[in-house]
Amino acid sequence: MKTTTMNLSEIKLSSEYLRLDTDVETLQKSIENVGLINPLTINNENELLAGARRYQAVTALGWTEVPVHVVDRQTLEQELISIDENLVRSPLDKLEFEKCLNRGREIFEELNPLVNRVDLTIKDLSTEEKKAEKELEEQDQDSFAAVTAEKTGLSKSVIKGAIKRDALASEAVKQARRVGDINASQTNEIIKLDKDIQERILPVIADKTVKEAKKIIAAAKTGGFDAAIEESDNIIPLPKEFANLKNLSKRVNKNLSRILLEELVYEGPELKSINKEIFKLKENLDTYFRMMNLEAPAPKAVMPTEEIIVENTVELDDTFNPEYMSQDENHTEENTTL
Image 1 (tube, rainbow, N blue to C red):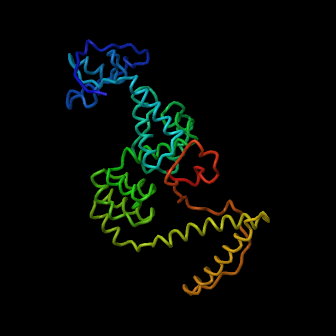
Image 2: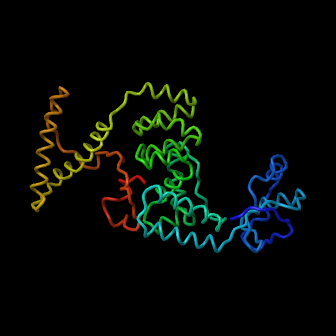
Image 3: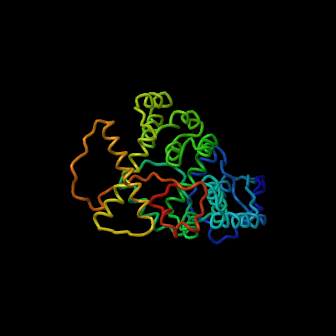
C-alpha cells in the first residue's frame, strides 16, 4: 500500500455499497478544523474502497485534491491467503500466531471495508455490558474474527484477544513475553495502558500475579505511574510456587472429586504409576501441614464437580497449531489462554 495525493475528480465511485447519502455535516466541520486525518482508500483503478463519508465531506468543502491510500488488491489477497495457510496449517508460537491474526485482520478489513471491524479498544465492562457484548458477538457473521473462528475452531473472543495483544502491546512488552518474563494474562492487563507507559510499568509487574497486576494497572490508569508504584509497594508478593500450588490443587481436587463422585475405576497399565504419584502427594501434603502448623480438616462429603471453580491459568505450548485445537481435549478453549 502506498499513500499519495490525487485529484478528487479522478476517483471512481463504482461500488454499489458505498454510502454516499449520509449526513456528513459534523465530519465536514471536523475536517475543516483539523484536516483529513485518515486518507481515502482506493485501488489501482482509482475506485473508492473506503471513505465514502470523507469523500462527501471534502467534496462539499470544495477540495480538488485529496490524500489517498492506494491498495493493490491482488497483492493483499495473496498475502491474506498466505496468512490463512499459516494460521491453519503451520505450527506457530504464540506471538507469531497473534501477529498473523492482526495482519490478517488489517488486510481483511482493508479489502472488505463494509464488514464489522474488530474493536481494538479495551473496556472494563459490567456484567450486563458483557452479556450484551456476548449477544452481539454471537450475531456477528462477517467480521475477520467470525471468519477466522470458522477456519481455526477458536472462538471469536479468543481471536479478538490475540489480535489486541499484537496491536496494542509495545515492542518491549512483546519481547518480555517472548523470553518468558510475562505471560498472556499479564499482557492482557498491560495493554490497557498506552504503549509509552507500558514500558515503564513492565518491570513493576513482571514478577506479579495477574490479580496483583490488575491492581497495579488500575492504579496507573487512575493515578499515573507513581500511584502504580505505591500500589506495587503495598502488595505482599505471592511466590509463583504458591500461586501454582493453589491452581494445581484446584485442578487435582476437581479430578479427584469427579473420580470419587462417579466411582470411576481404572485398572490399566498406568494405575501403578498413578498410585505412586498419589502416595508421594500425600507424603508431601503431610509434610506441608506440619511445616505450616496446620491440622488436616475432617473429611467431608464429596462436592459435585460443577461446584468446583478452577481458575483459567494454563497457557498454550510454545508451538500452536489451531487446526487440531478442536480435536485435542487438552487444548480446548476453556482451559487455554492464547
